[in-house]
Length: 300
Image 1 (spheres, rainbow, N blue to C red):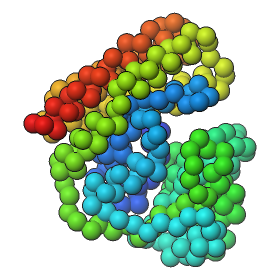
Image 2 (image 1 turned 135 degrees about the vertical axis):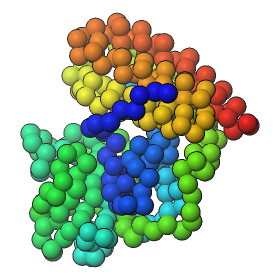
Image 3 (image 1 turned 45 degrees about the vertical axis):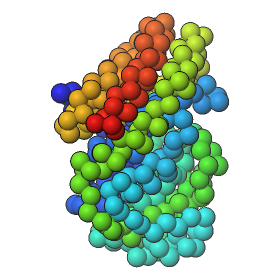
Image 4 (image 1 turned 30 degrees about the vertical axis):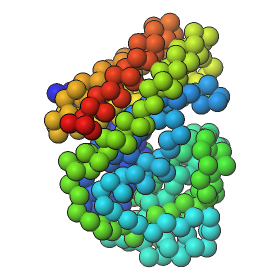
């Protein structure tokens, strides 16, 4: 059984959704796996590798989780006035999940103050008409912000995927009882489709070529400070969850991927891009193995 990682993570959408669901939520690790983020890989048009399925984004992942777990919610998009009216109903028992927002414009994150093209999610737990109280999963509980500052950050044109401004989810409620084992069983065919082994392997090879040519500063920080951490964590969570529910061979491939991705961190920071590129090429064939085991689990 893989060793379960516990610690700071970059899964702001899964952390925020868990906070929004409260005591009835299954935990951020389970939510992260059910988003489908751990299956596949793609190369963005600007050369950034993402250890997530092609075409996937947090919005699709959140919708997937809610469906698999039997939850629904109300969603408001595009209108600051509607969002503000919804926030007036927020309290400790009636939370709202806000995002994506532009992380660089969140005023409580030190040293930013300008768009950086990074999406972020958070939970609003209070609003007095002028200030919001938020639980920001990036280590900021009960942060108080002027609501206008939040609205300024709540525009999405700088992000890498398309979603309306002022995207807010409220009124979370369970519509059917679904346990984790059933949700995972229903995830199997979805995950098998998300892997897209040929495209993922091609993305890994493409990322290796990018590493062969060296990394710009933004690309270095994308990999070393975010994507390697997130990619390894997602697969570790998935390996543990599948292993606990008897999908041993699926768990073994996910664990192999987690170890390969995680092992790139030191070479990247040390500037040994050749080693990272070699590891990226070792990752490429594992997507075929992962799809094979997922399909076998569906048929079993």
